[in-house]
Length: 345
Image (cartoon, rainbow, N blue to C red; front, side, top):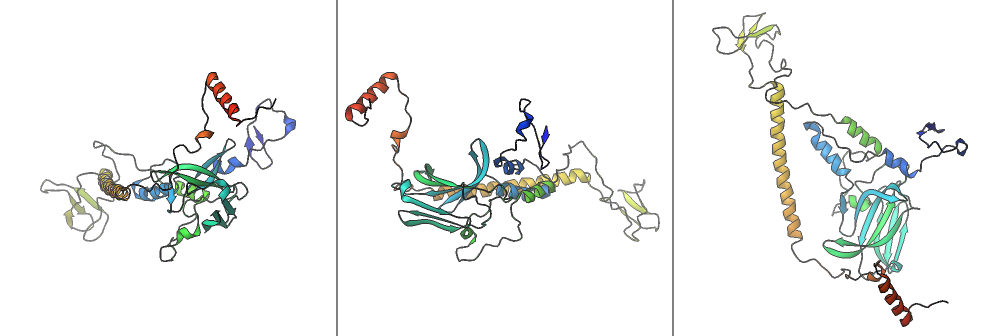
């Protein structure tokens, strides 16, 4: 165990000589180690909706689809290390090749043209997070709306020192409504490491579940131990032989009133109330999910447009094939015979 000049501690193998100095970890790992990804928590009922919204907003599997393009936030493997990045995907025509594409990327703006025609011309919502020097683009073939199409995939790496996560907006135009007004964001703070840790620390675990035969709880507040006439707290709850129910007898005045009675103690009553609310919430969520599936089914009912679909034999010749020695000999002889490959003696 050794400590660096910055106060960090690292483990090194015993075979490492001390004269080689302290080996700093790769900077690519620092931000990923600090990021609290996907914590599994189960907060109490009053915080469930807030936690669900937080989990959906920070879900790396969520895709932001805007028709002309879509993007997701996640991690990319770079030389054995995981780096956080934004994956921007733009559908292309089937005749577009890499030589037809020109891309201009800065901290504030992204411009992509295909054969001189603009494909994407957008300004970033936040100009402080992008690592321009290491970001890159590539051509890929993916299924877009049930159609196999060419896609320009741009990997936008995030600067390691940037504490912000890109989970809400990528481009400034995404914050505009159809009539040109900006979307009201409220007082929501930026999605940063600090805000995520504060959210996780704010969550409180629910009370332990009580079975039907467990009757323990604080019931003094629910019993209303005060006189309904003079307000004195010097009351006695009891049931005399002539009383039909429990009564409150005040020691400071002669007033007598019926005592509050409940079928269940306060802990079990609160637990039953929460169970009923959760059941109603599940029914509403099931209805919304069913309505969403119906809308998606109606939207995808027709036959998809296959005008830009990539043929099945796209780049078939570049794929690796497994051959026996005889097959390889026959293929090589055919290529030499056709003159496609020159034999240099």
